Image 1 (tube, rainbow, N blue to C red):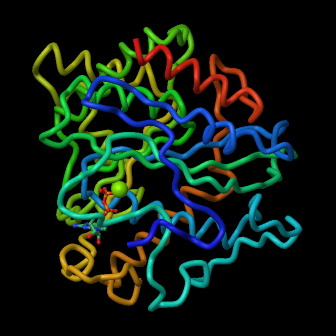
Image 2 (tube, rainbow, N blue to C red; image 1 turned 90 degrees about the vertical axis):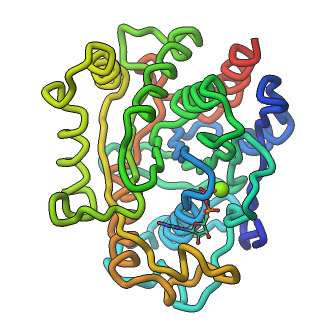
Length: 331
Ligand code: GDP
Ligand code: MG
């Protein structure tokens, strides 16, 4: 697959080398955050994290389609008054359009571990406050597999949370105890990185559960998802002291926790070798839930401004924040 969409490309801004050393591409960071026209805009950053081959990049590429259809961007400017939130399928593109953007299905073996950013930035003015925002999209790779250690996982998970205002945790089939453990470790790193724990250090966490197969009990989408995650994280649902404290930490650290359950996309999406990402080959149930969830996730009311210690972050401050975070994580 290419990693080229017409107006932007995926840039590796941070790599983990040999599981330890972090290499940050300062010049790319400066390019993405340094565009003069967006310096005074407030930052919205969506990030996704989870195991390799979980359909993360695939999901983000459909998010990019939504974003390009609804918002102008630095590389694709147009008058914002044209922005109309229609409820039709047109943003999903032609039914046979190959999916491009963040490189997806890159093989059976992951090559890099790190953080990848889309180098185009989406622009919007919020109706509710009149604030001008800049929307950034971030992918991660090389986590939760046999080659990454729990420490790597927690570090990058913490970094993702510290950087983003909307964090998706992509999981296959269900949420398991070890996933919650990462959340616990991540909060330790967050404290270490200097976030004051008086305020919640992280913003929104959305569990995105793929190939959900228990829709009799919990229906697809966010309705079933929110019910499910509430149940899973309920203190009544755990009999062990340690797990109890993991659950408490999660609620202490995140402003809002949500969950979406997506159905199995069908055999072609899940396993056909030369599948190009077109939506005509998705199971209709999956396509429709994917569409509904992306429309919910990215509707302007749900675009959360990045805050650090409860203060809104402007683009001009962001690249320095990122460099500081990265330096702390390097040590
Ligand atoms: P990533 O490593 O998590 O970024 O995964 P990719 O986005 O590269 O996708 C890996 C493979 O999963 C591709 O072959 C996709 O067609 C497939 N895929 C995409 N979405 C889903 C899903 O919801 N369920 C399953 N089982 N496979 C998916
Ligand atoms: Mg990927």
